[in-house]
Length: 462
Image (tube, rainbow, N blue to C red; front, side, top):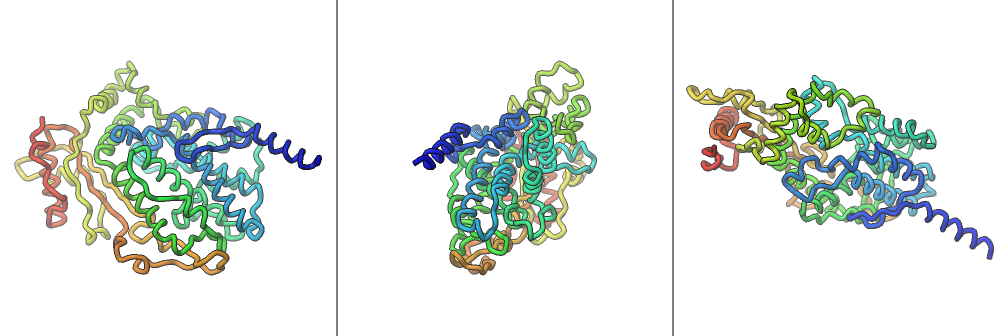
């Protein structure tokens, strides 16, 4: 009876060192000691001070969850995914403990390189101050992983360390390893092959719940039935609607919450405030240095707001306007017609100002803000299902794509929206901006593409 007792002791010893966290989406999450070493660092704990949805909480008050919660969720789903694959195909795929460790660690650390206010920092603020230089949170996440390991002397196998970094940047197909290195492992956290990954599984459910929006997408269904064929994660043919629901729900979140017209108005104001403050605070100066970058979080706005420096007055005034809900005024929007997609170029404030009627030249470029929003199903103007491989039944060695018209004639024939929104920085100019926007549509499209005219009540508001 001695051997069973030793096994029991090992189990007890393992449980004793597990960190138990109660998550409001996935329930109980357990962290093993190696992962806890990363979590219990100031660089990872910083994610508590980065809101997952940036400024969306200014419109959806419940959307105050952090990248800390999301990262734990992705870690948990990454672990479940690789465990399921190993359970059914472990021997044939040669999955090792180091593979499991790398996948879970990549899920945990994939977002440690994010800047303040999520994607707004990367796609809105930095392009305005970097003069064309490119920067991505994935690249910074890789640098941050190296920094955390070095700074805290974490003992990680060099092979696992490298795999983690490759998995974080795997959303770019050029960064993926060769076919002989279990390519499918790199599709679990950040899938550059077809866009189905546990990162989306977590944030779609988590964000929908936080915003109070319904979500009928069930990630468990896909995770429990996936199968690796020819080094690619494939899905049962009868789960095609679940997969389409994944992409449709993501697009709906973008349209309804992430790019909500008022959320974008607040983002545009924060971008302007950060651009004004950057020369004095050096906000963008730390984006290549993880030892400084980790100190940057959402508190940057409060730092500006309570500063007594006169040089920050214009930034403080913008933040005060946000606090008092004196926002840039949304004038109107239109979806770019399909027939002009091929030659469409982002519309600029200059385009709107130059569309004023002669004799009414009251607007300046600095009075107008234009937001060009692109929303797709992860594959541009093509169906996301084109990139996904399916199988007929378990144990099958054959994979195949499914065309949209084989699924349903109710699915969209076009897979991308470009929405042009125009804002006035001053309430009293809403009428003039709205009129110029309508003139622009008539001049370039030959028609008014917006759904309805800007309400007179809004035009006359002072």
